[in-house]
View: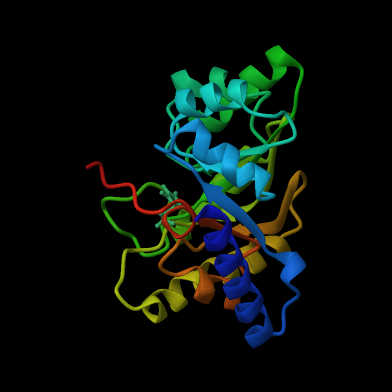
Length: 229
Ligand SMILES: *Cc1c(COP(=O)(O)O)cnc(C)c1O
């Protein structure tokens, strides 16, 4: 099941790249494995997946211990400062940094462990009250502040778009994140690159790819739904 789903998702990504004149090699697929048991992650690993996304620090750290070390772990959920220690040195990329205080905690932990931390700044493009991330307007200032931390490196932006029936409704959200990345890139801020755009989930990754996503985060579309029965 996982193998077939993966083929389908990759096929859809290639189609979306074709429609928008992009090369499929520009788009990384993150298999969002939150709540799923190790056996399912292993199945995905055997089908070739090396990028896994988790939204809880402790769950990520447990799965990190249990699975092969060539996996790239992505923290995609809201991160509390007291959980930073479980992730630094293990994760490939933290997608969900939305405050200076969190970035400062990452800096402290990175210094202690003598490692570097790569992050994305999370942006709440739609301005939904229920979601994390700074506003479009506040993001540039936050980027400038985080840029001063020597062991924390901003690689781009991430957004979680609203849940919609028709993914076309999120096109302007994705285009807005892309535009913001272009605007920030133009400022040529030291220690900041805008090469990574993490946007699109099961319901809307095709449109996200058309609008420039370099990572899509797909859970349900690979592992099936998460409803507890
Ligand atoms: C759960 C989650 C996803 C994956 O959602 P699906 O709709 O199952 O693909 C992607 N991004 C974030 C931040 C998530 O929390």
